[in-house]
Image 1 (cartoon, rainbow, N blue to C red):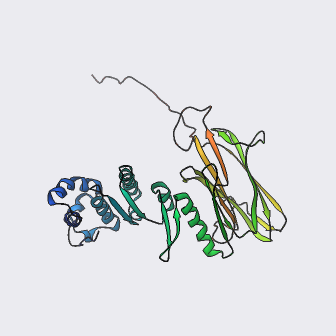
Image 2 (tube, rainbow, N blue to C red):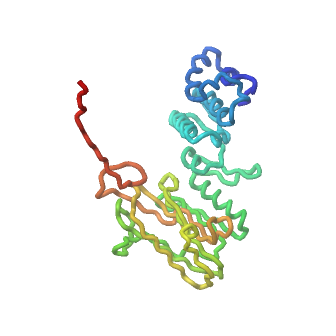
Image 3 (cartoon, rainbow, N blue to C red):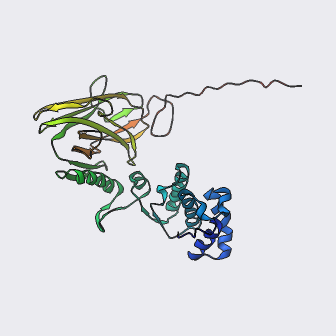
Amino acid sequence: MGFNPDLTGRENAFHSAGLMGYSRIEIEKAMPEIETFAEVGKYFDEPVRTYSSGMQMRVAFSVATAFLPDLLIIDEALSVGDSYFQHKSFDRIRQFRDRGVSIMFVTHGMDDVRTLCDRVILLEGGRALKDGPPDEVVDFYNALIAEKENTKLTVEQRREKNGWLLTRSGSGEARVKSLQLLDANTGTDVAVAQVGQRVLLKLQATIHADIDRLVLGYMIRDKQGHVIWGTNTWHTSQVEQDIKAGEIVTFELPFTCTLGPGSYSVSPALVSSDTHLTDNYEWVDNLLVFDVINASKEYFIGSNYLDAQFNISRKIEESTE
């Protein structure tokens, strides 16, 4: 916003909004809302040079969004500041989007991209590498990061009939042969899991070259692409050592389905450590998709079922007379 460090927050708000083309009367009318939204207290009337970067961002964002624009450009602005104000700012951005404002959002925060954007452009060295829906570009971006560290990688993308995007990348020393979601008791395939059901993820990996270490990681995402849960066998201290070409390694992960009703995907990664940036043998986004329904638990909303019950007590307040 080009704030002058010697002017106060209020004075900078008047100056910046004036440069945006608003009259003094319009700015004075909006000033109480700007001050309230920024929540910098008495510092609003102190020189901006006394502000932290987060406080400057609060005032700048409050001014920029005090009026309903045709186009709102946000360039990494929300990467600073506390989490409370970031949530507050994202809520305002969503309100603008729902009211028809065009938003150009520049960021490296992939979760923010999935949440806010309808169209994503991936830039590198001044060139547009990818232009498309959020899931397609974000998954390509994640694969591209690994490719920069592993020159042998290939990246493949295709849209499945169920609407989920499958992105596969890797150097190929280990590959996923099969991935199944099974009922933990009967061993039958599960396409629709129930809240509270015991299920089992079963993955078979084929080994195509001798490797020193093999780690399996999982990410479970909701339909919006948000990661609901994830871990890998590096963090659980279950790393397989000295695997030979021709072997088939089977991983089984039993768990209770505590997900909320909805559609979910499982993304497996076969790597050598806690990250895919060292050795990405194979990473497949959204390889397995399943639905969850609530057939036996009390009604709830959200992406997770909590084993929680209310405790309620009542008493008659004793009179002090």
